[in-house]
Image 1 (tube, rainbow, N blue to C red):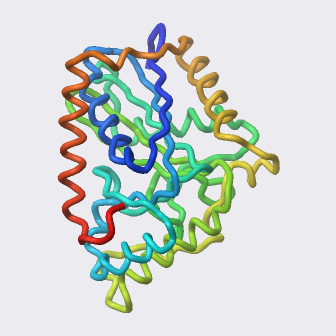
Image 2: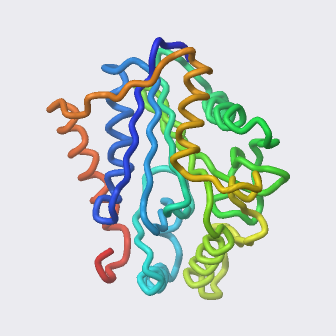
Image 3: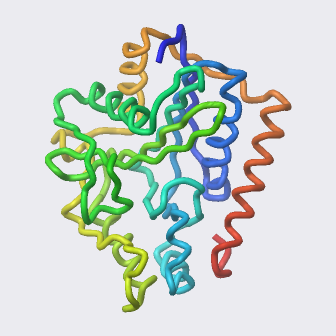
Length: 271
């Protein structure tokens, strides 16, 4: 990637706005030809289990959603990645957008995000590898000594590519893992696991703060990542104008698509 600057967006979504996180991702991906520069999008949610498209096949998903309500967790189905992940005050979500003018294979796009995190934390031996017994395991999990600190998914269309990463910065990762473990236990309720939902173990996952042995805040990590990307691209960050009518129309279209996706969920208490 080469550019004189990159676009930087930093958003927090309240529970009622949760679907906007992925609506923005889709709208920004479609906006890339007009922007024609790399883009970094930070976003956070509050105590939310983000379901993958595969999770709607759980035979007892209705019981699961009741359980999540009882745990005071919000939930919705995203349109990328196959399995559930948690987003809360200690988890940073970041998306790296690359315009189509920079052609990248699937693996090369994942490597761009991997390199960004590796160079941001050079004192950690971060590698991309699948971590069994983590939630949403995949070939491009980010791990330190075989223990997962984050996971990636990817979307692409003729306009470009977006690589999405959740990064566990701080907080009780064991509690997060326990909740996802229970989610699959209740969702299967003893029935055959024909879709190969993960058997999540707390020992398979950790946080950046625990790896570094020092307190870490999301604000600090965001500053470090922006600094690293600036050096990688030899570029400066600037805030884009997202108020153009065309972008607003696209955002509303993508939000309607996300709302339609939620109809795949059993009807329970509004979340």
